[in-house]
Length: 503
Image (cartoon, rainbow, N blue to C red):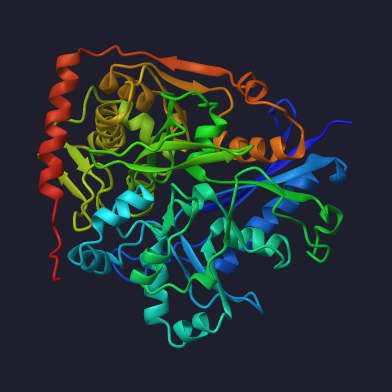
């Protein structure tokens, strides 16, 4: 009998469920969007109950659409928007506050105070990260400091805390499993990536009771089983939840980047470039961070990472806030209608700048406008800014990594854009390899679950499932690309430190 894996891909804007067969092919999928909540400029929240409801609904619908015996599902893998932080009641399961999303900048002042206290070196040495509002630790502190009664309840042991993986596993198992995987834990700023444990010194510095935190576990093992009383999913009761990884590490795994030096970039809400650096963490000199890629079978693999906060979200902004396009494909058509951006540069620092700049006080900028600028020029500049940001990441990654990149594997929603991928190949002077299976993040979660469930026995089997759909190679003159990058860097400087730091 054919066996299947279910992947729950809980992203920043949608919750999705995808069923794969043992050949890595998609059998069925379903997805639901959920609200983006912006209480103040630079603040981003989600409703945790909406995250759970949409994930639950997507799983139920995908299983129904597959027309298979639910008992043929060998396991469930989780992949999730990372750093987004949730606190909930250990008894009732009710969140005490909205989820604070990875993009949220509200804890910038907390970060500044931590830097002023001299913690930057300790954080980088232990966690592989930089002190930034991006990561989970300061979000957890903010909720305990600002929501009445929460700190007291946390200290009494009444609450659980975690990232979205923990929240989903807790709900799927009916509250039986309060766990996180090493890849998600390594994005919190309170996890020691060398010992693979929560760090008491950093938790104390942030005032976080360690009893709140989930148990860190490997990325491919049984965490628990589906509870029998999930309405509509009774037929799935007992199926193991046995794979978990943050979305970017899951994509690295799903792209079969199993050899040190292999790298991928995901074009999602943000852009995330990760390189497999093997079993020893690399200390970045260039504003990148080091995380746990995965641990499978007792072997830990680390990843060097650069994060861009706004990529595909810039296309959404063009559509939803400016109303210049009706759909993402229209952005491509407009961009293709002009030979270049007409000198227009968009810096999408809506929530600050990530790597390699790490400027929490930068804000979005459009420069180079003239009376002749059209929406086609702006559309092209939006696609270019995504490629510029990725080129920045690859440049500094080459400075840090033991060996330079020889190509870039790509995935994510915006990777379907041929014009964007060609611009990217031109800027990088490298081949850009888009797989036939673009759902690499979800497949990474399914693959981790499949290894634990015995559907696959080796990385070689998984690597054999990957196929290239198109490889984009540099076409444009290198000098012209270098001039574009120089103009991009001038525009970035104009966006930096735009709002005042009052600390």
